Length: 244
Image (cartoon, rainbow, N blue to C red; front, side):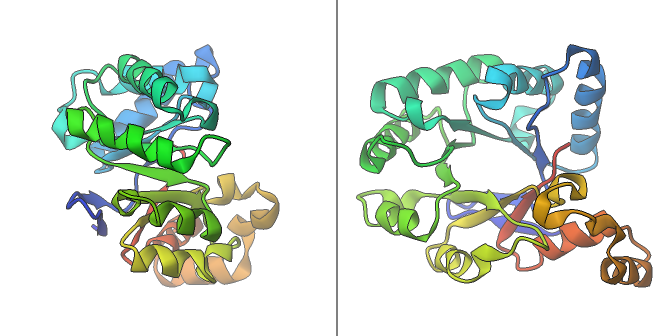
C-alpha cells in the first residue's frame, strides 16, 4: 500500500475518504455510513470533512460511522471556515467539530481557504490547540503560491502539515509552482476531487471514457478510476481523498 509521511511523523495510506455532500440527504444516511465503514475496512485511515459540509451534517455522519471503531487507527481531518478563523471563533468551531465527530481530538485541522482574518492569528490559534493536546497538527486548503509564501514566512508557519487542493489528471496547475514549493517546505499535498467528481467537473468531463486512460487500465487489469488515483499518488507526497 502506498503511504505518505507528514512532517510530524504520521505515516498514512495515500488514499483516504472524502465526505463532501455526505449527510445532506437523510434517506441516504445508512448507505453513506456503510460506504465510510467499507472504506475503513479496506484500509483507508484518513477521513476528510469540514464544518461547511452540510453545516456540520457531514461531521455528524462521520461521527456516527466511526463510533465504536479504534480511534487511534483513524486520522480525522476537518476544516474551519475563514469567517471563523479568528482566535475566539476558531476555538468555538473546533470544539463544535469535536462534538459532532464524537471525538476528543483531531489529527489535522485545516483553514478551508484564505479569508480576511490575518494568517498569523489563525496560526497562533492552531498552535494553541496543539499545545493543549487536542490537535495533532494543522494545515490549510486552497492556498496558492503567494498565500503559501505568506504563511511559511510567519512564526510557526513552517508547522503547516498539509495543503488540500484540487488535483486530478486533467487539472494539473499545481505542478508548475505550488507542488514543488510544498515538497521543498515538507508540506504534504492532499488532492480533493482526484476523480474529477466522477468525471463530471468541467476539466475532467468524460475522463472515464478517455481512450488513453482506458488503454492504460486494460494493460494493468485495472479500472480507469484506479488508474486516476494511482496517477495522483505517484510521487509519494500526495494523499488522494475521493468522496467515499
